[in-house]
Amino acid sequence: HLESELNALVKNAKSMKEYSEKSEDELKVHFREEAVKNVKAMVLLDIVGEENKIVVSDKELQDRLILMAQAMSMTPEALVQFYANRDGSLEALRYTIFREKAVDEIYSKANVKTKSE
Image (cartoon, rainbow, N blue to C red; front, side, top):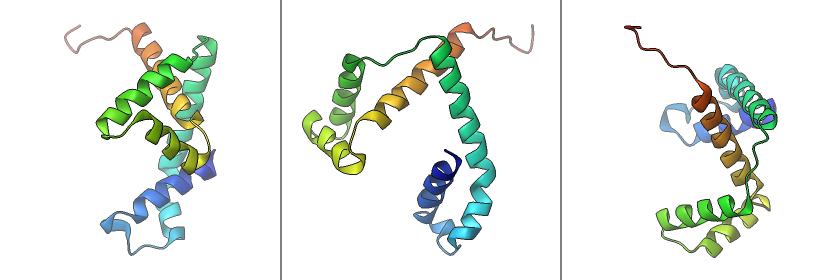
């Protein structure tokens, strides 16, 4: 997971002007700590999701596809095709929804206090 996250951060950074002059190795050093934090957060969200038996139904996935397609001015079918061409499946989107639901679960159980309390 760490290497995948680091590669994703580096790939994203290469498209940014401020990082365009840096080598891939320099970018990996620069973004390593952020990649570690991201992976730790993903693992924690996975644990929260599993312990709370969070699932993403096909309907939730379909609803998200419809919203995304509308936002991008494309048909849901075209968006599904985009995902199929990119990585072969909708599992990355399903996992994103899973993590969002895990975050919602954490927030629903959080005991937030203001500074005046």
